[in-house]
Amino acid sequence: MLPTPSVATFRRKTFPLAASPRKKLLDNLTRRSRLTNLAVFLIASVCSISLLINLRQWALLPTLGPLPTHTVAFSTANYPSTRKKLDHLVVVPCHSIWQGTSSWLEEKDWLLEPYQKGPGRVRAFYQHIERSVEIAEQDANSLLIFSGGQTKPFSATTEAESYLRLAQTSGLIPHETPKSFVHSRSTTENYAMDSYQNLLFSVARFREFTGHYPSKITVVGYEFKRARFTELHRKAVRWPLHKFTYVGVDPEYEGSTNALEGERANGYIPYTHDTYGCHSLLLGKRQQRNPFSRFHPYYTSSPELGSLFDWCPNDFDGGETTLFSGDLPWDHPTIARES
Image 1 (cartoon, rainbow, N blue to C red):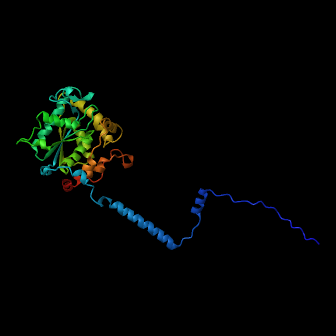
Image 2 (image 1 turned 90 degrees about the horizontal axis):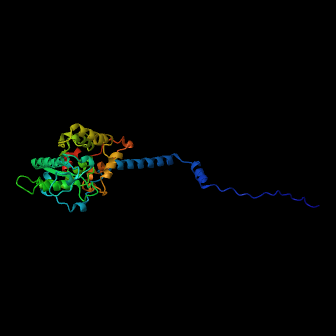
């Protein structure tokens, strides 16, 4: 008898579909893993120690060492011993560029904006210089700084340099005499593009010129700008009110009402919305006044003010009027003198 035939069922050989890399990753991440209590404790301990180390480094960051002194850059600076006693900063915010050679009371001698034209304006510029020199002569510990950048595209000089040149040409700052040594205590700040920078950069220039910061400040400018400097700019740099003086000299022809209204609309109010002048309208003015794309050097010569130079508050910081809260040299008068 023949054996019973074998009946086999044909089965098609199949291959599993290859899983995508994303699915493999998801499977690996969601796969159960057996961890002992010891393993969990070790992982938590390592994370805690790492967090504490990072927090400690962050907390100690300001005291890790002194600010860079840029030794090579300062090696060419000359600091006569007579500058050590200087403690009074006298600032003249400049408003235009004098391009004359011997005359200064005519509009043709100045590079003026349309709103600056009119009787009395250029005379006021000269009176600001004259009054500031008088103040510097009365205080042998003062440093007179004319502040203003290269704001005009058709000029090869700065506002500050032209003011100092006018002071020398007119005889207001003569060569050394027994009566006064103002010529050796006068210099320029050549980078400011607006009134806030006039104040802040002049403080930095004082540090650059003397090796330390001033103890008191006197600003000589338009009377109708008194509130802007005293209430807004001084407050923005947190300078003490009792160590700040403003001397106002206005053009003789201008009525107080018109001048104050113009100042309020174009200066005071914009700064009440943008304390540091680094947004929209006020930023646009700085850009317009910087045709040669100049940048100030005070990060190097006044490194203690670096954070204040960069302070431009926004909504994340509490709004555009949020005051700088970092450490400043004049918070510690002794340190300021030893800077």
